[in-house]
Image (cartoon, rainbow, N blue to C red; front, side, top):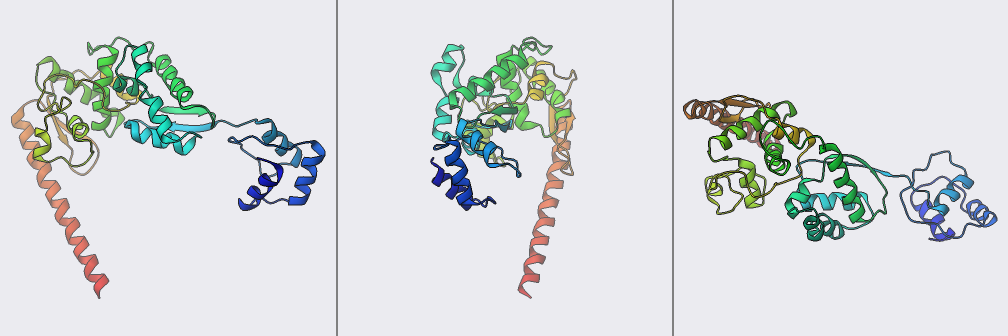
Amino acid sequence: MGVTELSDLMQSEGFAFNSQEFKWVAKIQGWKNFKTGHYLIPAASGYEAFLSKLGRGLQDPVTYHLRPGQTPGRLAKSFSWSFKADSAAFIGAILDTAKAQSKGLTIESLFARMLPATYELYWDASPSNIVDRVLRDFDTRTASMAKGSSGLNLNEALILASIVEWEAAKDDEKPKIAGLYVNRLNRRMRLQADPTVSYAIGERRRLFYDDYRVDHPFNTYKFRGLPPAPINNPSITSIEAALNPEKHDYLYMVAEMGGTGYHVFTKTYIDHKKESRKWTKWLREQYKIREQRELEENQLEGE
């Protein structure tokens, strides 16, 4: 934009400056046009440094925190909030079939490599360049992780890691959860992982009986083994857990009472049912407490 447009924009955004003085300095220094971008401007900046920075397009990188457990749509929207391109352009880059095929991957496996981390990226970088930057970081971070004690290769570990990502609320419990699923795989049991059902129905919420019966290749209650591909982009801690799971004899788990985020692990189905009944009883009590609290609040509002 030009000098007048920039001055008007600065005024609308609450910059403290003299508009006429600003335009005069820009004219003296020969600045006529300024480049779009992401600039960090110290509060005490002088006109010369400010005009030079925008005139030369000396951008500051955007600090972007890529979160784990995303879906392509949510990640594309998140990218569009922080960078110049819109979410449609990012979806195209994230689900780039040609890019996936060039790496011998499915688009789901390519997306699973969108490694959660903090990145320094330029605001006007193309979606393709941003995706490539993240994929390079994945390759670097996982270069020494190709083999682990789980017996899974990296692609298989990413599938398991994506399940662990949605299953575990605590990083320190991920190896134990991964170990449980590896035990089931080794015994040719169905994984019966709730996150795969959530993926199959396209919604993360409390699951109901009919949800577990959905005829979908990712439904591990119906089909044995790992699902066909990852269901999200797992964090490095989930990947490490999938490659090097904790060794134990647990086959079952249920959420721990008290909303701690941890699980109670058991070795037999009988013990699992006992723990499940305890959890169900506790959950019903929590619903009753919440309903009673809401009733009392409504009564107070009506008085």
